[in-house]
Structure formats: C-alpha cells, structure tokens
Length: 450
Image (tube, rainbow, N blue to C red):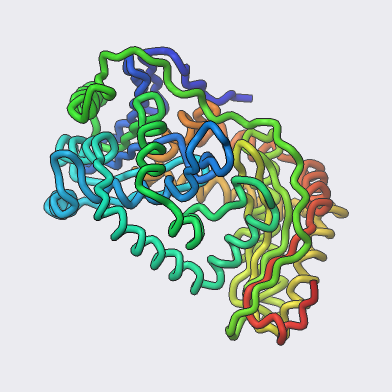
C-alpha cells in the first residue's frame, strides 16, 4: 500500500511531483517554512500565513507565564488594525484595491491569515500579509475598540442556537481541557484580557520558527520565497532570514489524561426548535482508525443517503437537518451527532440516533453502503481539490501536523481498504463513549431531564 509523502522537518529544500503538479518546500535559516503548489492554467493564487498556535495553547494558570486566555482570537482581529507602516484603513484599502478575498481564522491549534488574489497582485499581497503578521503594533485604542467588536461577535454566536449547542458540546465532552474552551473566548475572558498579556502572547508565538507560509495556484516557488523572505525581514530584526533557528516542533498526537464527560448540559432558550447534540470522546489526530471513521461517518450521518438523515428526516419527518461529525486534535477528539427539531420530538430523535449507531455496532453494514461511502469520500475529496484554497490549506496542515502529505490516490487507497469489521468495531468503541447529551432550546417543552 502506498505510504504518505514525508515532509522532512529540517531539510532546507524539498520537492515532489505528483501527476504533473509540483510541490516545493523551503526552510529558511530562521526556521520559517514556505510551501507552494504550482497549478498550471490558473491566474490566481491562494496564500496563507499560518501560526502554529491556537486557542488550546493559551495559558490560564501557569505561574511562570502570563495569563493569555483570549489572546489568540484578539490577535486575529488586531493584526488588521495597524502596523508600523500601515494604518487599519490602509490595510483595508490595499486589500480592496486588489479585489482580494481575504480573512483570518482562529482554530484550536492554529491561526491563519489568508487571501486569494490575481497572480499579478501576489507580491503586493505578500508584502501586506507579512507586514500585518510580523509588524503589528497592537495599538491601545484599537485594542479597546476591538474588545467591543469581539464581544458583539460572541453575542451574535450566542444568539445562534446551533453554534451555541456545538460550543457547549465541546465544553461538556472535554471538561477541564483547553480543547473544551470556546475558540473565541467567553465574554468574561474578553472583558478581562489586557493589551500587555496579548502583546506578550504575540511576541512569544509570532516568530519565524512558528510561521508557515503556503501558496497554491499561479505561483513560482523561487520568486515566492524571495518575496516572503524579504518582506518578513523588513518587519524587524527578529524576522531577519539570516538568523539561525530550527522550526518549531510539529504538533503530533500526545498522551493525555482521560476526561470524564458530563452526561448532560441543557440550556433553556425561547425557540421553536431544540438543537440536539449526542456524543462523546472521539479519535485523536493520527489515530490509525481515522480512515475507518471517515467511512463510518459517511454511512452513519454524512449525506442525504446516510442512516441518520434517512431515519430522522426521510422516514419519520422529525427534523430538517441531521448529521454526524468528528473532530480530531493532538490532545483529544470528539464524536457527535446533531439534529434540530420541535421540542416535542426531541426524545424520539435522540432514541433514533442511538439506535442507528447501535445497529452499526452490532451488524455489518451492507455492501451497497460501503461502496457508497468509498465513492462519496473519493468524489468529495477530488472535487475539494479543485479549489486552490483547499490545496493551500492542505500544505499547511501537513506541515504543522505530523509532516505527512496525503495525496488523493494514497488517501483513497486507505479508504478503500476499510473493512466491514473495521466499521463495526469502531462503532462499538464510539457507542461505548456515547455519554453526553446537549440541548439548546425550549427544554421545558421537550421534557428533557438531566
């Protein structure tokens, strides 16, 4: 069976050719890593500046380090608010003048600042993103203004009952874990954050060794390396490409304590629907069963022909949406199933979801289901790779994670090798951890009791 391509962590130059597409990696002396994928025939480039630090890395109680809760999300906002050489308005104006699609995202294990632009605007975009990421000033006035913006963002999320249910689900399945904290922080955390602690977080983690820059599309690797190297060096002495440092270690799966999920977490809200999540601990990143999980999830709750969708919506008309999912991280994972329904139907939906997982854990799936899942996963992966943004992100996730680059054919081999027994065994494992129910909505009408 074909093995994934290993990206050498400390090798200065690396290049591979996959079906006519060239992928190259350069490690600068200062530890900054640059990866590109040239796609012929394109007139645009998707690029991202990835910092290998997310909300789960924030410190809450280490006596030797400042409290940094909320800093990751704060920085995602503040890096658009001015640098030594650009004001917040100038940053916005320059992106708009190029017609760029640009944004940033905070995750539990990384932060990314990204854009998609015409190939002729690549050099300008590199200069702009390098300035934002490497030379932000975190202006005190902008800090206070953005505190209000973030609080409004959190309030908007709290009004979205599906979003609130998912955030609550992570907290409930992974209590006392950094992975269980909301990525954006809580209103209390954001109100308590101060500019000094966020600045220290920025100085500590936004370094060449933590930064990975990726691009996919109409990009010439050697020219792109020159652009990135010179533009980050302009940000200050600490970003000089001639400095010598190893890149930060990759985030591999780590041994962690077992968390005891809470059994239930119900939040009363005035709503015509109850948003339900049922689940428990899932697979950590790198688990050898991850391909089996992809197939299991496809059969169980991913798509209109999945068992959850067919049973809950098509056969019983209990909900408009029903699906299952898994999220994997270096220090833990979750598995869950979601549906939104009228309060009076909640108990029935929960029972059907449990029953369907029990069936998969006790009886082999059919040949037709297995074939459909393999086809769905292969087709959706192939279609996703039509996007330069997906390819750009794939480079970063491989570099920041285990260093394994999975091309489409190699991943599909592993998917096709999953057996019915693998699926049954994994379903039984997940069923054994199915301990948590989260509900947001009119709990009283639903008759749910903890």
